Amino acid sequence: MTAEIEFFFDFISPYTYLAHLGLRRLGATRGATVRYRPIVLIDLMAQVGNRPTTLESANKGAYAMIDLQRWAQRDGVEFAPNPHWQSLDFGLLGRGALVAIEDGRGGDYVEAVYPALYGRPRDLGQPGELLAVLEAAGFDGPQLLQRAGAKQKIDELAANTTEAAGRGVFGSPTMFVGREMFFGNDRMDFVAQALVAA
Image 1 (cartoon, rainbow, N blue to C red):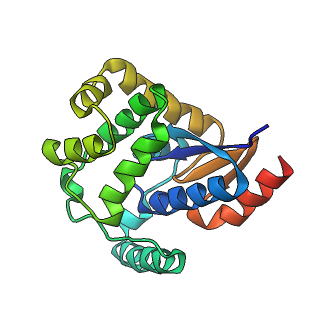
Image 2: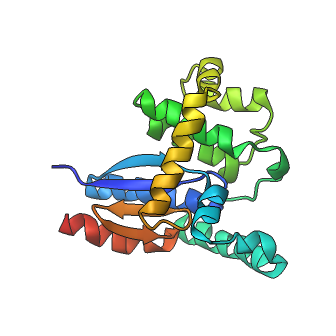
């Protein structure tokens, strides 16, 4: 039986981009599948009493950018802060992931969107840019975004967030292997151990 990693994530978190790349490597080396569970991180934090301290503290935010560069260099991956932050609609990106998951292409969607956010950043807040990224990955971009705007997907994203809070999640990235929870891109060794045990 193939082991599964359940991945609660919000595209708003650059550390989650790094975790996604780590999960991709684990999938290749351990034969595990990733079950993508998009959430709304700010709503999750409000539900569990957490706070986005890297946004509230200029010092911590500046350090995080240095730290992210260190992780990317260590892992040999591209990383750059997205200069178009204010125009990005992370809720739409999360709902788009739900549509792709429904169609059996969640991994393809995440693989397309994350590099366009933090690898070689593009302004995905511009409809033409987002459509170009989706269509380059083989999606029908207009149809996907239309479906992502449906109330059903808004409700589904909220339900994922509430479920995550109920299971002890307090941030993104969070991974589960069975009942074991792991938080952070720096917990991949523990995730790998849990996969072996599973």
